[in-house]
Structures are given as structure tokens and as C-alpha cells.
Image (tube, rainbow, N blue to C red; front, top):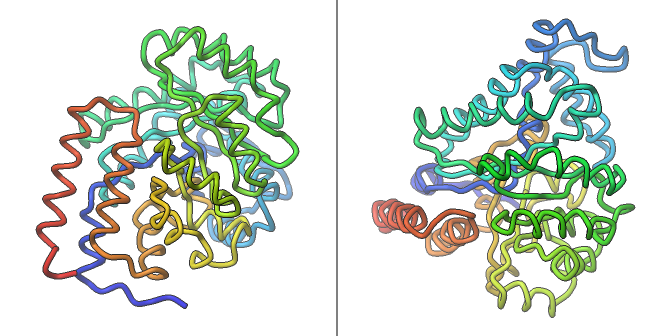
Length: 354
């Protein structure tokens, strides 16, 4: 069952300062931009690929599961060739998210998906970094870039990717390491060496990993214990292990929950099945995110509204979620204070209306 979100609550959620920690920049590639870049770069898409924006949107509404989505996603990536393409991709996301009330984002990108088709990592990172700089100067959005390893590729390829990214970590252009792609057949222990290499060479880099989206809670526990991550992406299967929930709360390990994504990829049938209330009850910090919004039918505000329409959370609950998102971000204390103050300002504005 879903509830109607009142106008005041909708306005409150719109204005509430948001931090996004789980968005794949390649997953913000709208059908419109995809076909535009395909034409600009002379890329011929496979015969089986949708022929226009309308058919593409229809395809996006009918993913069978995570792998079905990924198959489509990697074809979409093929239109990204030049530095300008990557800048255009990321900046389009920043503009869209700014309109949803985004103040800070820590965004993923997948260099292996580009390098393996002949695009230098420098092209990818320089384009994305230009967009990040523009987001700060033009939109007042603070940003961090998180490089993800594709878990369906062998770990030695991940080692090579980390080594090639060293200058960008050294310069503070890339701020973290993540792990994404097909989860179930590729457990976290396959990537111990990759995470150790980052920790040894770039001790200030933030560590996170996709875990507990489709796979069981052990993928979460092993990501914490073997990869030494301080954040878990998705993590919804932690609801099946109360001791793990207590640990996540005690250690303040933030989960980056992606409600509409979980529905699109058949993790749950409806947003109402997500353990939002359970996380709040146990004190597990989590943020609400869009994952691959161009493919999953909703950017960050859409995800906030989807949660509100199922759970009817209090204003205080939303303040907790927003502040946990700030505290789980890899930003300095001054920026955290700024965002906390802005959250309090918006809540006080709507306190008597919601």
C-alpha cells in the first residue's frame, strides 16, 4: 500500500539537503544523451538495441534482473568516447540532482568498462573531473569520485586498474574505491589484494563495496572483515541477520540504499518491502540513493518520495536520514556542520506543516 504525499511534505523533502553516495555516473546516461553521443561519435549500436528514445525507455521498464540490466548498461557505455562525453554525462547528472536538492555527491565510475574498449583512463577521469569542478563552481555541489572495480573481471585486472589510477589518487582527484557489477558469483574475498593495495598506497582513500543486494548477509560481513570497508552499498539483505544489524549500528557503518533500483532489479516487488523502519529501529545509518537513475526511472528525489509514500516517516525520521547521510560522507567536519545547519533550517521551516 502507498500513501499520498502531502504538498507540504513533498516540498519539505524537495528542499531537504541531500547527500548521494550510490550513483553510477554511467548509469545517469539518459536515452536522449545516449543517442546524441552515438550520433556525435559515429557509434553503431547493436541490432538488438532499442532503435529510439521511446523504445529505450520501454526497455528500461522491463529488466528481468541485475544481469539483464548490466547487459544493456554495458552497450550504453559504448557511446562514451571523448573527454567531452564524460564531462557532458556527469554534468547533466549534477544539474538534474541539484534540482532535487542535492548538496553533496560521492559518485561511482567504472574505468575498466572503458579501458577494455580502448578508452584511456585519463580521458575518463579528466572528463569527469571537469564536470566535478563545474558542479562546485556553478552549482555549489561538493563532489567526490569513487573508482569501482568490476567484480566479474579477474582481480589481477583490478590491480592493474588501481596502479593506472595512482596519479589521480595522489592528486586527490579520485577519493575512494568501490566494487560493483554482478554480485552473487563474485564474493568480496576475491578482491582482498585490490583493497590492500589501495589501503597500503593511499591510506586516506575511502573504501566501500556493493554487498547484500542479491547475495546473503555474509557478503556484507566479509566486505567489512576482509576488505576493511567503512561503508556498504545496498546492504538490504542485512535485515536477515540481527547481529549484523547491531554491528552496523554500533560501528556506524552507513548503508547506501537504492529503493527504486531494488524494485527494478527484482530484489523486492515494492519499496514497502525494504527494511527502512527496521534500520531506523536498530539505529543503522543509511542514505537514500538513485543508483542508475536513467535506467531505473527515478533520481534522488523520486527515491525519497517513493520511501515516504510507503512508510509515512516523521519529519524527525527524515532529519535522521539526511544527517546520517552527511555523517557517512567522506567530507571534513566544517562541511558536515554546514550541511547539518542547512538540514535544521529546512526542518524548522516545515516543522509545523508536516
